[in-house]
Length: 172
Image (cartoon, rainbow, N blue to C red; front, side):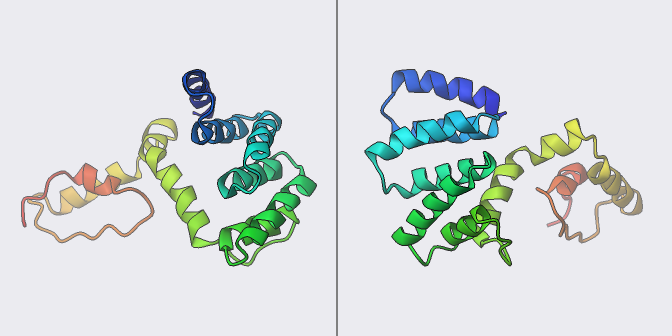
């Protein structure tokens, strides 16, 4: 909930107004709360203090992509690639800013996306979307193996909800 996060971060910033890490996170939350112009302004202010800070540049690059500010995003992408030409993430976002379609996403981009999503995946699937699949599959397995004497390998997309619905193992 980025809107709520921005409210809390705003309070933290009142206590630590010069903390660049908190300000950067606040800007990121503003972006995803639908206020990318405000986020870009805040990031620009921070970059005036630290013009070659890669975390700030990358955040502003992503913000400008989402805000449709391609020229600004490209400028940040080019600065990042000048700082570290071998960084796959910087090159990927520069391609996106230029309107190109990269052949693949760098592993770091995918990891960041799924790590952020995993924190809320279970709640989203069960409570918001009411997806009954893990529960239904667990019930089927328990009908077939009520003594829980089967070896089961859960290789799927998710966070292990099937195991949670199956309950504790009676075996090893």
